[in-house]
Each structure stands twice: as structure tokens, then as C-alpha cells.
Image 1 (cartoon, chains in turn brown, green, blue):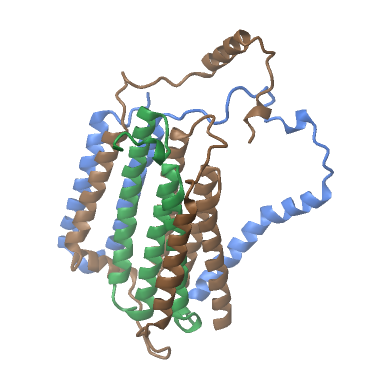
Image 2 (cartoon, rainbow over the protein chains, first blue to last red):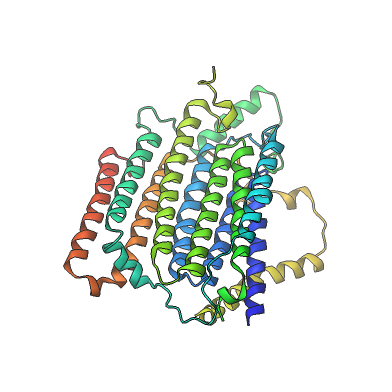
Length: 204
Length: 107
Length: 118
């Protein structure tokens, strides 16, 4: 049975890291966001493997369900219509690669593998902290952080609205389909071009 | 039959470290600001993975690990909300989302 | 506990293989003779007009924002609700304060007109 758990863990870990690599390397930013969702999902499965049920559900609920929607909407709001083929990484991206690889290989991994962790002995009877205990902890020891979290969410909501909201008078109007067709027709006429099928030029 | 017996703690920490470093690379090397934010989200996830691993392997009867993970998820959501709003505002005025093209404060 | 979730794992694998296996099978079985008309974007039989990536309205983002904030509020509500019987009136008051603070945000968004779909 332990072998099975280990196999599941290794598969999940490999998938998480592979999805993470896709997030940072893939060209299309929408695909990067979708890979990020995949990575979140497999991290949630790892939480489940570590018997943190509540955190796993929250991971799916908040990251997969909410934050990724936010990211996708933001991408659709900011995307260059003709932004394909633009360089995605800085010219000196290899410096970042060296820094990240050095942090991983030189600093973290040797430390983690050499330290003597005080892991619970395998035979010991342990009681895992349950969701009820999380609830009581929020109302007792962590009461102040709990209320501060509420204030933080309030500040985030108001701040993001202040930054992103546009008064109606200054808003650029989104063209209706008919206006877009008309605009396109005029452009084609002025260029004296025959109307072409647009599917071939929009596909990447 | 549980994870503590099956997988040693350093393995889990190494996976979290790998995820963190991938996120770091993404945050440092991407030009698109949304891409930078995706890298930061990866890093926050790695931190959460670390917290849950420490909680499960070292102090499974203490609730603090899970509570901290919840607070980090809250902070991550707030950060993403405000960060993406800033990206939208920058796009509206400068029509770009690339971090190296938003350089009017550069001397 | 993990054994309970093994069912979900089995379901997940079954559900994932449901679309993937036919697609793989179709990939090997189907003939591939693409023409320009076949590769065209299908838009209810009409000729596709304009770009796929139209500019979205900022309203989408504001709605998603409100959704995220109240999603996280619900995350805090769950453990509170599970532990409610052991906590009593004090917890009720605390959660009321928590909710009132966030409702302030909703009122702000409403007054500012951020929730209007125009």
C-alpha cells in the first residue's frame, strides 16, 4: 500500500512540476493560465494525499474556481489583438534561469535533505486536526487574524474597483458586430482588397 | 497506511522547492505582467505545499499549519485581484502589458 | 481516509479517459484530407466575421472580482459552520462582524455603479 501512495505522489509531483514548467515557458498566455489551473489541481490532489481535506477543497474552490477565472478575464481584457509572435521572455532570461536553478540545487535541496526533521514516529497514534478544530481556532486563538482577513478582502475589493473601474463617460465603447462589419468593409474598400476569409489569418 | 510512512518529508519539500523555483523563473523572465503574476501564484502555491507538509509530518495535531495555509490563500486572492486590476489600468493608459515597456519612471 | 478518496481517483481517471480515448482512437482511424473550407472556423454556418479575440468589457473583471472576494468569505464560513455547535453566541457575533465588514465592500461596489451592466 505504501508503494501505491508513493507512486501516486511521484506521478502527482511530476505532473505539478511539468505543468509549472509549461506555465512559465509556453508562448500563449492563455495556455499558460490553463496550465496553471492544471498545476493547482494536482497540488490539491497532493493536499488530499496529505490528509488536509479542507485545504484541498479550498484549493479547488478558490484557486481553480475563482482566481483562474479572474486571471482569464484579465488576459481577455488586456490582450493585444495582434499580439501574437511578440517575444515573451526577456533577452537575458538565462540569468533568471541560473538564479532559480542555483536556489533550487545549491541552497534548498541540500538543506532539506541534510536537516534532521523531527517527523512523527510511524507507529504513533496521532489525531489529525479536523475542520471543526479549524473553526474553533478561528474563533479563539486566531480571532484577530480572522477579522483582519475580512478587512484585507474589503481593501482588495475596494482597491481593485478604484483601480479598474472606468467612469461611463470615459469608457471606450465596445463595437457592436454590425459596426465592426461596417468598419472592416470600409477598410477593405480603402485598401482595394477583395474580402478574404478571416479564419485563415486569425488562426495562429 | 498514510503519506508519512510512504513518502519521506524531504521529497515533498523538494517538490515544493521545485515549484517555487519554477515560479521564480517565471516571475523574473516573463515580459507579460500577467505572466509575472502567474509565476507569483506558483510560488505562493509552493509555500502552501510546504506549510501543509510541515503540518502533516511534524505537528499533525496542531491546527496552525492549516490556518496559515488558509490565510495565505486569502492573501494570494487579494494580491491577484489588485495586481490584475493594476494591469488592466496600465493597459488602458499605455496599451501594453509588457513590464519593460512601462518605464516612464526610469531615469 | 485515503481509501475513501480512492473512489474519486478512480472516477477521475474514468472521466478523463472517456473523452481522451475516443480522441486517440479517432486520430488513428480517421482519414486526413484537409481543405480550406474544412479548416474554416465554424460559426453557426455563417462566414466568420472579425477577430476571435475581441476586447472584453471591464465589467467582466469587476464581476469576477466580487465573486472571488465572496468565494473566500464562504471558505471562512465553512469551518465556522461545522464548529458552530461548540462555540455559541460569541461566534455568531464574530461572524456577523466579519460579514458586515465585507458587506461594506459590496455596498461600495453597488454605489459606485461597478455592478451595472452597461
